Length: 101
Image (cartoon, rainbow, N blue to C red; front, side, top):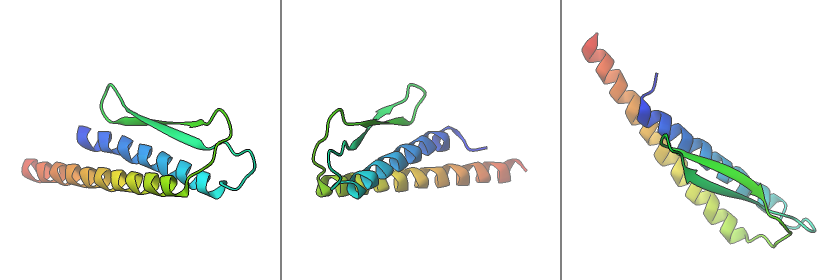
């Protein structure tokens, strides 16, 4: 079972995934008439980690391709960093099990 750092990092991966999905959705629909883009609000959880909540804009608004690509790139960086933390935590757990075995 992964430790607390990996569990927290998994919430980061989930949040990043939601941000990438929203950016992809917005780009795919940017030429749709009266399109209301999806915006993701990410915040810290009290127990550690993060949570991302998607909301549809209250009214139609233009979609900036540049903004969506930057958001997607930032979310990908977040996902990679979180995945590295999961890997490190699991390696440390494996080392600990080797010592105790």
